Image 1 (cartoon, rainbow, N blue to C red):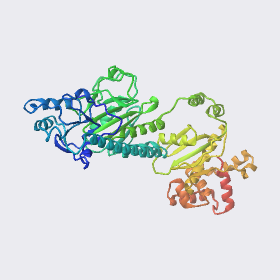
Image 2 (cartoon, helix red, strand yellow):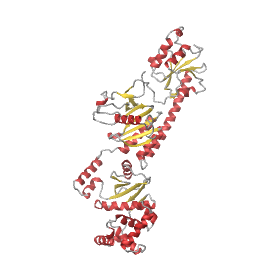
Image 3 (cartoon, rainbow, N blue to C red):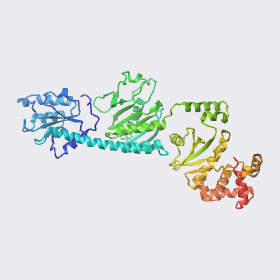
Length: 544
């Protein structure tokens, strides 16, 4: 049976047409399968309708073409077999004016060939049936467009969250009712969302389905290598084009899985250098799809769902575009300049020499932490850098550091707590880094979205730099090998002696803060309740 050339409209379930009371249609033969759909209605009184069918039709006939002695021969069997061969979805037989009842031989033939047969009552015209089909299609199209629009909005909102990639995957899995996976260039799962991967084999997280989805991802991953000998990944490869996805696989004997045999260019799949943009497959009753993400970096989006609804491909394509933007790095002049700056630094150039290549001579350092308990991943960090306006991003455990040109004013970012340094030149980047760290600690303690390090003229400007550093070293000499005490004392003083807020800023228990401050007082042999002592210590602790 040829693949039906379906129109760009959602199919109509045959059950929905039968449910129309105004039509009065009744199924009298063939399987009652809820998944049976029709793509259009067509009327024909030809004895052999095969040349005039595209597939997926509800073929309507009043039996004008039936000869008088048809019941005693193979006419009906031949007729139904040709309808099935053409890909017809169902047959509607109209009562009156030619036939008062549906011929028994036609009922038997439809049962034999498993073609749904509908009885059309005399009061129902074929044009009325066709109009009902188009009405149902319009309703389905409207519902599909609304579903796709809502999905697009939710996916775009997910992409703007602090954890964009997991959020997009979660939203996609929810919209298609299945599982969404992001595969890296090496084929490993970077992130996944949706139904549990611990289900038994054959489920959405079953081993067979997981392996099949990973194999489908290899089909669409760009490569210039010849695959190693072994079983080829099964799937139905498809290339995106103006009309959507064009399958190039061949149905496997007995149904079920399909296996790609040639690429769109006609070369053997194992030797092809070009990969399709998307591929589909069905394994253990689970529908699989894989989408190559843009920029040709090898990232692949995989989707597994127990059913495939109209609009699922469009929704997954929107998610693929968003993930392409989130995972891709576009080669440009600025990226080449950053690469040049890195090489020069590695070869011994100073920060002052390479700063112009990075975008300026005056900078701020931003430290950021997610408001959730999860550590930021590289993709979330890159998204934060893009939101702030800089690609110079570093992930250090639970803190993201961003080097930002001073003219780009950093603002609060949803889901993040930020600490911003004072403006500094390349020679003071290390100082600015320490300032941003302190500002972040203060922001977390105050539960503020963003705190900037104060840079106004202060007492330190009245003391020569060398004298200030000498005084700080002498006063804090006993803390030289105890950085935890130094950090605790600095944070405690910055928060006006608050035990609770200091504990929050340092991620320790309040009793730990009390013990450390008591130890500081003992080592210094000073009264930390004395405001003059606190001022002197703060003056010393502000030195980098």
